[in-house]
Each structure stands twice: as structure tokens, then as C-alpha cells.
Length: 344
Image 1 (cartoon, rainbow, N blue to C red):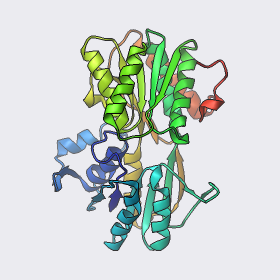
Image 2 (cartoon, rainbow, N blue to C red):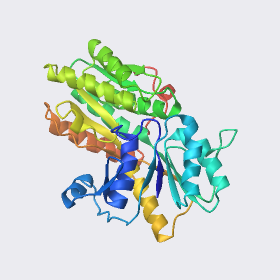
Image 3 (cartoon, one colour):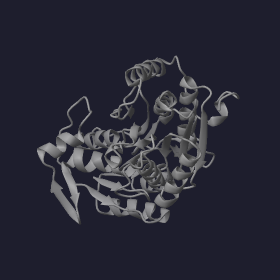
Image 4 (tube, rainbow, N blue to C red):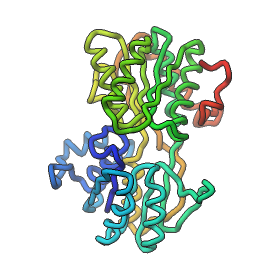
């Protein structure tokens, strides 16, 4: 089974690493070791599956992972997998939408999984191909919950949002986060800063430091590798004795800054990849579109491991909010324009 990584690549502690976990650790039972693979130990496999409510047996597949250096690599990388007879190719990230469509039309007997985007016509209308499964997420639902948590935790009344590219996908993160903050701390300031990309660690750190200087004591980093920079900024401030927190995205980054990471909006790309590989192995893979949120388990929150005053009450409030979102009693905005005018 093949996987084409987006530009952040292996080690982004986020979107790409989640997809790799689904293919390598869960589906194949292996871990990357230099130029090749080594089998996971039983303890390593248990650790990789921590927090899941169902067992995921290894599927006996061989992963073939291709790194993209520039966006122009996407299409030839997908074709490379097809030329090698890979039955299922996984494309990680919305920028690969055009490349997946081209590869799928050129290789109708091969199957494709496109994560984080539908197929779109020239007019921007979603459509389907029989050999392509697309998966999108209702990220705003999880962002609402961590926004509510940030509003409950902040002492300064100022929180920050670090986004990558200023595109509709990332705007959903901002909208959900700001709505959540407003739900628990209506008068809080939400400082928003976009880095313009997803691959610049130094810039993300600079933006994180700027938000800290402006009194933000909880920062939500939704910016890929740039977000790792923001996490590092908060970690260093925390290590220096400043009572600040950071919230991650896509994967749980707690191991990077265990004293600073409050939680994370976890996009279960790993589970989506595993299920696609499982279907391919069983001969039941079908195209179409999936839309996953809190209700379907496609969006979850990383455990809140740190202690803070009022933690039990805060977690109870989050549970109530989650139940209301799942029930449809709370409709989370998907763009900042949908926020009430009075929202900070």
C-alpha cells in the first residue's frame, strides 16, 4: 500500500505522522528505521494504539512511502506508485486533490484515498470517481471544545490562535476555536495570526513568541510544522516559569512539551488510513465521500494531562459541550464571518 506525503513530511508530529501511523504502525506493524523498516514490539504497538476503543490487528501489508519535496511532485509520485502496481495509494492533504484526480482517471483499476479534501470540478463543485475515496472532517467541532477549554483555563483573558495558510480549511479551525472561547469566556480576547504556510518552524516560533508577549496564556497552534514552532515557543516560556499552555492539532504533541501541552484536536487520519487499507485487503474498497466529526469519532481530543485549578469542572463542561454538539444542539460555525458581531 502506498502513501504520498505532503510537504511537511515525516516527523511533522501532525497530519503526515498520523497517516504514517495508520499505514506503518497499525496496518503493517512496522516502524521506520533509516532506509527501511523494523517490526514493532508488542509494547510499541500497544503504545501506538493507546486511547482507541477497539483492537486493530496488523493487516500484513508492505508500506511504500514517497516524500514530496515540492507540490509538483504530487502527480508523478502517485503515478510512480501506480507504475509499481500498488493497489491503494493514499494522498495526504488537500493540495493533492488535482493530482489524485489525474492519477485516478489515468489508472482506473487502481484505488485512491484522498484525505482532507473532496474532488472538485473546475467550478469548485464536489464530485466523485468510483476508484477514489475522499474523507473530510468537521474540524470545527473539536476546535470548539478546545476553545471552550482555553476560555476556562486562561488567567489573562487573552488567548491566541496560530494558523498556517489563510484558507477555508484553516478558517474552520479559527472559527470553531473562537466560538468555543466565547462560550466559556465571552469577554476574552482572541489574537489571531496566520503564518502563510505549514513548513516554517522558525516563523511559527516567532509568531508564538509574539502572542506570548501580547499576554496570551493559551495558544492554539493549527499550522503544521509552523505549529511545532509555536509549541516550542510556549515550551520555552513554560520552562522559564511562565504559566502558559499550548493546544496542538491533528496528532497529540504532548511528548514534545509535556509541561505545556494542554490538549489537542486529534484528526483521526490514522484510523481513516487503516480502514481504507483494511477494505482494500478485504476487496471491499469503495469510492465516495466521508464526512467525519465528533459523532463518528473522526475528531477527538487528546487527554488533558496537566493539572490546573478547576480542572474537574472544566472537563465536565467539555463533556456537556461535546454531547450538545453531537446532538446538534450546538451548531459550530465553519468560518469567522459566521461568528456573532460581539464575538471577540
